[in-house]
Length: 303
Image 1: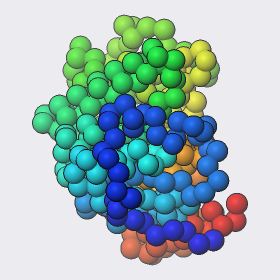
Image 2 (image 1 turned 90 degrees about the horizontal axis):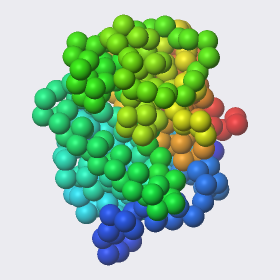
Image 3 (image 1 turned 45 degrees about the vertical axis):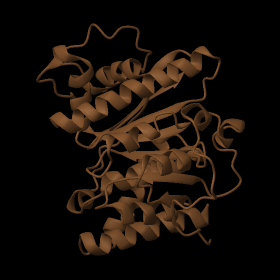
Image 4 (image 1 turned 30 degrees about the vertical axis):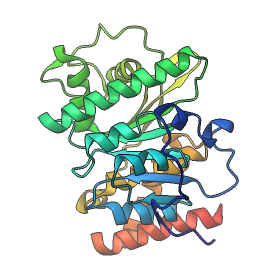
């Protein structure tokens, strides 16, 4: 299987799309997953991991678009791709982030959510994104998709951010037997299990939640509201924690797979499987990264 090369943000010259025209890009004319070509994903990521994210997106079967350094470029690219990955690493300015707030489908990685300045940028963006999603829905357009992907500490920071009465809150680990829709965000306490609080956060943001850690959680939306769609598994890939960018790379894979209509829970499970296989044949984090890339790519060619 031959994958396309990652490209710089050098699309054909166009007038810069308005914030509303982004939402009416080509992506609106088809359902997620009905593409028939490698998914185009816009990667707005930390410069320290940009190359890794591009390689992983390519190996996962996507066509990454890189190098959007201005708000105009970011907005134009967002109007042309299937999914945007917005990673709030240090190079991501608020102006660039705001340029994609109306993108049709966004995977958000809230890096630095627990830091004062960066946390404020993330809070404002999520608030704007929620408003844009609800405004579109009020006009009969329910096609906006947002996945907030973060580790446990980032999710804890978001909970404290949007529920100020939970200062000092930490996620629990228990999982109840039956996922149910969230009806109220008023009854949670600091001692509640992760699934309960993450469902409340999903409802508050009006976005799907992908929380990674030793146990992964996915809170998605169905006709009845936000529900726990995936919880597992407890089989840790130790080497993921021994090199930079493992979580950022997961965001890139989620973006590629989301464009193909694959549920985040499936992506998380497969990501661990590929990690375990790579770990078994590796001598350390260096060889692991090469083997993990091979596992991703070979999974695509065999499917």
